[in-house]
Length: 190
Ligand SMILES: [Zn+2]
Image (cartoon, rainbow, N blue to C red; front, side, top):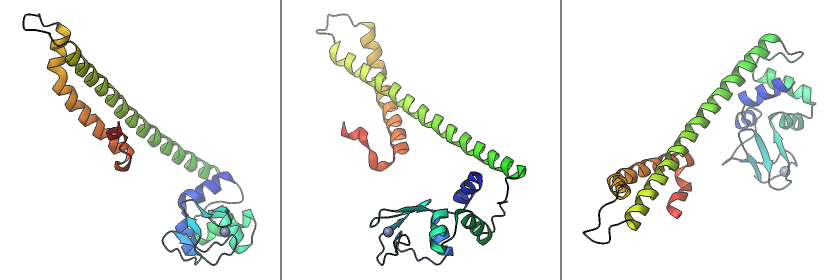
């Protein structure tokens, strides 16, 4: 039954389900169906509702159970019928299981690819930071004290790479900010 529950939850989102059953959503809020509230104190999320007065939550299936006063299995069948999902509810058939597994596999693959992409952005940023800090420190600390002092190789290297390091750091920073969203620009805070 879990496969069917997951299928329902991934295919029918809470707002669509509520509207289908005649529940009016205003600015993401509804009158709480869990304690029969009269004010719009119940928030609607993609996969559940949560009431800020009674503290109860319900997902798609538990909402239908409560709303129609029916059992879990009846709610599953009702959603399946009302939204023409074509899921076989009496037993898991193999075709359904294969399709479900394939979809799960694809989702997992996408999630991993996304994760790798994020990892690369952070790695690049850390590399850029360390090169920049290195050049910056060397330039400040190993500056020759007078004209006659011979330039050491590390100082020359830092001098050559400083502008490039600064440029690369800016690029890497903007990539990190893109990933974290503009509102969370923690880099400027430090
Ligand atoms: Zn409530």
